[in-house]
Every structure is written in structure tokens, then in C-alpha cells.
Image (cartoon, rainbow, N blue to C red; front, side):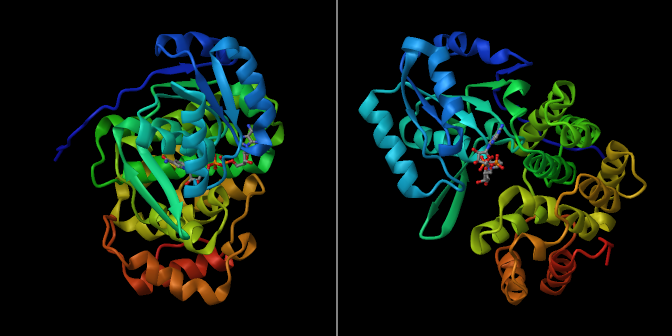
Length: 354
Ligand code: NAD
């Protein structure tokens, strides 16, 4: 029987090739005049170009964003925002850079204008993360939700083919878990299925030619829907596993999502048949788990944890951590079941429901 609660998050999205030109207007619209532009060290050139575009409304650049927002980096960025008298943050980059803007907004209420350059989806969520003493804490707070998001596919053409493939699979993972979320609802499920469809249809073309702007546009459109799905409903086993593997064993974020997804899907297949039917339909496959794995393989993306830095001796500990705190999953979580899943993912065996 249909029964759900649906709460829409406020979102303003400017989408399309060349939409970065709208950034100065968006800053003005927020009533801001001193923007702190954030980036990773690798994307400093992009941050500089953005600061130039903003002109006199740019207060400065902070280019030290790194994965998982270490508290020391967050504090340095907060100090810089204060020192410059910034009245908004413009994040130019992937989830790490958006995450840094969120760390500033969490304590200051500075509005965020996000300019995403990967498919991670953080720009559409009220979820923040901070790492202290090797432990990543996450939480939800509406004040960290970007006020305006500029999706310009031109900024994604520099994303290397493999980051595009894995970042795209990360986005697909948000959509997949949204379809079987505890608080799933028909509106977000429509967005999630369409997100999977758009990403699966465009990512292979993106990987073949990272400068294919048509394919880039469709992939970024899918990533938007994926971020919106992640922001709106709760996630389950797959995100928990990736959080453990990334946080405790330092495995790379997007690659970990890419490897784990078919196994998490196989684990949940019998408990979420409608979600599986929708995933399979979106990727045009007979079976959701096998189809997702085939998509990764077709793009040359990693398909085994052993290939992305996981040590066999850590599998037991990873399974223990993944079952530690109870959380929603369509199929009950058992230590034995998760240990088997991790073993399969470690070896890159075909993902089969067990
Ligand atoms: P990332 O932001 O760490 O970027 C990876 C690398 O790619 C960086 O060096 C970056 O500068 C570079 N890069 C980004 N875009 C590029 C482009 N267009 N061209 C060339 N290089 C580019 O990677 P990510 O996967 O986007 O983000 C991962 C982080 O985001 C993780 O810490 C994850 O936990 C977090 N995340 C948070 C949420 C949330 O809702 N809070 C959602 C998704 C991901």
C-alpha cells in the first residue's frame, strides 16, 4: 500500500553549458559582495578563473580543500573567511571542496554557492562531514545546504576518464539506495530512476571522450538527480560499507563506491524487488547487480577491493565495523552475510545474491 512522507528541500539550480557566466548575478541575488572562493590545490587555476569572473565581489581564494574535511583544514578555512570578512562561499570542485564550504557554513551561516565539477552530489544535500582524530563524523543541518548551485558541464570536461567513471558510479549508488530507502517516496524514486538512466546512458560516452559535451551534460544532469536523492532520503548498507572502508581503511571514495555497489545490490536483491526492477530498467539490464557490474567493467573501472588498496587481513574488522551500529537496510544485516559480501568484493567475484 502506498504510504509516505515527502519533504522538499529548497534548491535553486542553474544548469547548462556556459552557466558559470551567471555566477556574478547569483552572488548579487544572495545580497553578498565578498565571496571566498574554495578549491583543492589541484583546482587552483579554476578557482582563480572563477575569482576573476566575479571581479570585485571576490574577497579571496582558499585552495586547501582535501578529502573528508580534516578539522585543521576546516578551521584554517573558517579563519580565512573571518579574516577576509567574507559574506558567502563559492565552492569550485568536487565533494571535498563542497564539504569544506559546508564546514564554514556550519559555524558561520555564510551562504554557499556551489559550482560542482564532479558527480559526487554533495551540493544538493544538507549533509556535512568532518574528520577529527581519524574519525569522520557526519550530520545533517539545513544551514549547510547550498543556496544556489551552478551546474556547468564545461567544468567537468577536465575530469579524467577514470574519475568520471567512478564518480558517476558514486552518483548511481545514491540513486540505487534512494529507491530502497526506509523513507523512500514516489517523487524521489522518479528522480532516482531517471538519474540512473541518465548516468548509465552517458558515462560510457564520457569515458570514451571526456570532452563530449553532450554526454557530459547528461551525466551532470544525472548527478544532480542523484545528489537530490541523497539529500532527500536516508541511505543504507552500501553507504555504510563505503563510509567504513573510506573512513577506517582510507580507501579512495569514488572507487570504493564503484566496487561495492553491485555487491550491496546483490545482498539486497531479494528484499527490495521493486527497486531492483527499476535499477535494471534504468540500466537496460536483466539483473540490477550484474548490470551495474557490467557497466563498471565496460568503462574499465575497478571491480575488486583488492585492486584499490584493501588488505585481506582487514576484512574481518571491516565486517565488524559495518554491523556495529544498527541502521536501516531492506535485508537484515548479519556479520556473516557482510563478511561474505566483503570477501566477494575483495576478490571481484561476480556479484550473486546469497
Ligand atoms: P574530490 O572532491 O575529492 O575530488 C577528487 C580530485 O579530483 C581532487 O583532486 C579534485 O581537485 C579533482 N577534480 C575535481 N573535479 C575535477 C575536474 N572537473 N577536473 C579535474 N580534476 C577534478 O572527489 P569527489 O568524489 O567529488 O568527493 C569526495 C568527497 O565528497 C568525499 O569526502 C565524500 O565523503 C564527500 N561527499 C559528501 C557528500 C555529502 O552529501 N556531504 C556527498 C558525496 C560525497
